[in-house]
Image 1 (tube, rainbow, N blue to C red):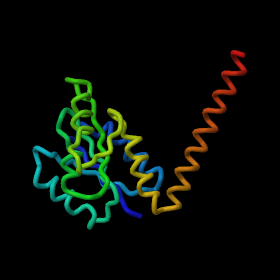
Image 2 (tube, rainbow, N blue to C red; image 1 turned 30 degrees about the horizontal axis):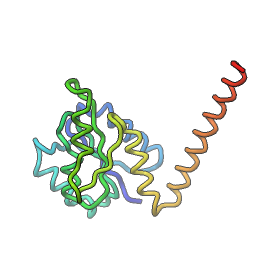
Image 3 (cartoon, helix red, strand yellow; image 1 turned 90 degrees about the vertical axis):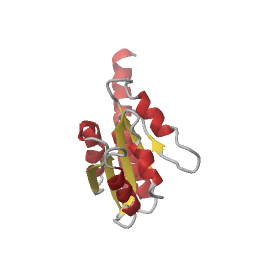
Length: 163
């Protein structure tokens, strides 16, 4: 199975990124976690992106706050799918990170999840890998069924209590 790169621009993003790491691990997906900055370590970030496919990665998740735009820098260096996690910052509540991640130029796509949406980034990465991995697809289906059962149980409890 291909592994997933989880790259953050600063270790201050780790509390958000850990949600993605934990989700990937819960599905048995290997995650390699790095701190690489598009602006403070541009050569290292570019080299990582350029070698990602050859190093066994299938997807890159990139998290950054403010308008740092690590996901775009990763996408510029690879043809692997890149998923951006805009991280909420103290100045613009993550809107700057969201816009810099979602507003990619034509020909350079980056999938973007919600501000601080690390778990969905991991699930999207898992779905991408599951295109060619039926075991992973089955795990995703089982998780969806479990979520469905949980919501239906809560619905029944509310119906019984208020109707």
